[in-house]
Amino acid sequence: MLSKRIIACLDVRDGHVVKGVNFEGLRTAGDPAALARRYNDEGIDELVILDVTATLEGRRAMAETIRAVARELFIPLTVGGGIRTEDDAATAFDAGADKVSLNTAALERPALITALARRYGSQAVIVAIDAKRPAHAMAGRDEERFLVYSRSGQAGTGRDATEWARDAEAHGAGEVLLTSIDRDGTKAGFDEVMTAAVSAAVSIPVIASGGAGGFDHFVDVFTAGRADAALAASIFHYAETSVRSLKQYLRQRGIPVRL
Amino acid sequence: MIALIDYGAGNLTSVRKAFAAIGADVLVPSDPADLEQATAIVVPGVGNFEATRALQGAWTEAIVARLGEGRPILGICLGMQWLFEGSEEAPDLPGLGLLGGSCIRLPSAGVKIPHVGWNSLNLRLETSIVDGVPQDTQMYFTHSYAAPVTGDTVAVTVHGEPFAAVVQRGQVAGVQFHPEKSGEAGLRILRNFVQLAG
Image (cartoon, rainbow over all chains, first blue to last red; front, top):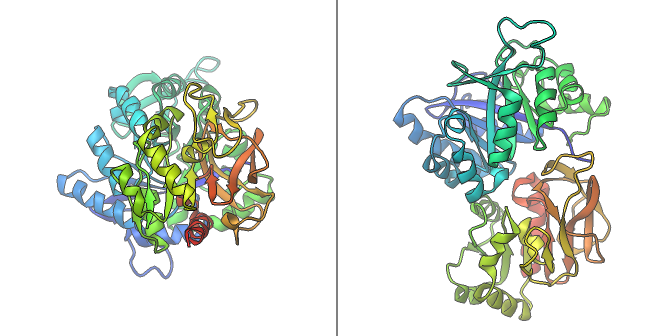
């Protein structure tokens, strides 16, 4: 039976992990390769490196970071953040990424999804969708509306998340990484209603993100939310919980995981 | 020296890196003639069966010649499917035909296609390619088409329907999952293949 995947995310700036580097006994705090190793030992199923660098120098450091992480990691590695062209993607793949995650660039130029899927295969192209519920949702009308934002959640696009997910799949995306802007950083749980709506709209896997705060949040997003995978950052970084104990909890509740 | 065939189907970095990690010498020949030095052949690949068109002709001849000398071959993902007679993904294109049967699209009833993620192996045969790999080991898959379960099937995986996850017939081996992305268990498969090369 196909396992539900637990994915960890590292936000990296200028070669350093910028948030949540609180692993006990980790001498090289902030070193992405050391953190990746630690996650790997704990049984994480995949790793995402998110480039939050704004400068050109930082971008160059990113390829080095990917290389350092990929050298010792033999699980799928996704690189996202700032991939806007085929050349950006090629740099990430050459450095050892298995998948790239596209966000704003895919919204502005969906042909980029197709071009990358042709060259590297659909399995290598994730479309990241940041979405939230309308600010003044009206009962009976807006429960199932989720609006897509671009530029790190700053710019409204007027597009509906389920419609964009379907469109991204048609353009060749292999997976959708769906982040709830409302829930991100709140630890209030994933938006399982939104996740279920997007998951039902596409046939490709959906990775839920934003809001993980406790074990039951993962149970909810894998059952009611119909997610194929769940991504979290700080819940693991701060060693509030280990990946292994989360997976044991999920297995006890009948959710298939890799242990 | 293990020859990794680059026919333009996806990115070879990960496979190369994984063999390097287990201390195996890997070369990516640019010309079929360079296969003469190969002690073993790996055909990786992701994407559409159509991509194997690039393997027809000179590459196929050079690969068949090495196999005739007893060199082992490992097909990974699309590379494994190519070892069969063909695939309904590109019906006009023959596979290498070393293994009987044709690849089909995974049925989508009740499950998502592509099949992406970690799934378990149900080992049916004890062959050298799965030496030391425990029953129910999980490997990382990403594919929409798969090979049928036949007498050469070493391990079966179920996604909606059962399909061949590992095959072996003598020096010919194939895995539908990505051993280069399946952690320690995946590296074990690659080590077993290197052993096969002697």
